[in-house]
Length: 147
Image (cartoon, rainbow, N blue to C red; front, side, top):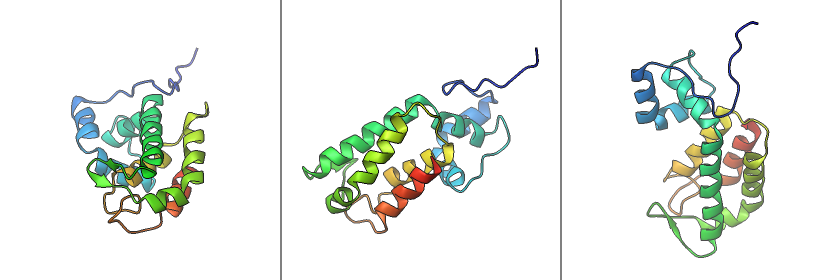
């Protein structure tokens, strides 16, 4: 029987200790690379990070964050000490719900789409947050299309 790659969503990728450490410590940089389509060689930090982004656990984390943002936007709550731009969130609520539904669906997701979502969530100068700029709806739609 030929050897095949384990394609389970939570199957760990094998990589060197250095690659695993880099994947964790440089997650933000790797999100940027993955969101642009760079995936790296098997076993590289980028490949390990991509595998983590495609996991069920990461999907659940993003769903919790998005649910909290939608709920909090109506109450003026802060996320990570940065006030959410409630008007932008309310205007994009339907798209946020579509993203959440896609993340909850049993189909696999792409690391590129998840990386784009993580960038939306982590960019304190982006349209998700009160002092940020940009098009939240557009960024969410791009991430959804990439999922």
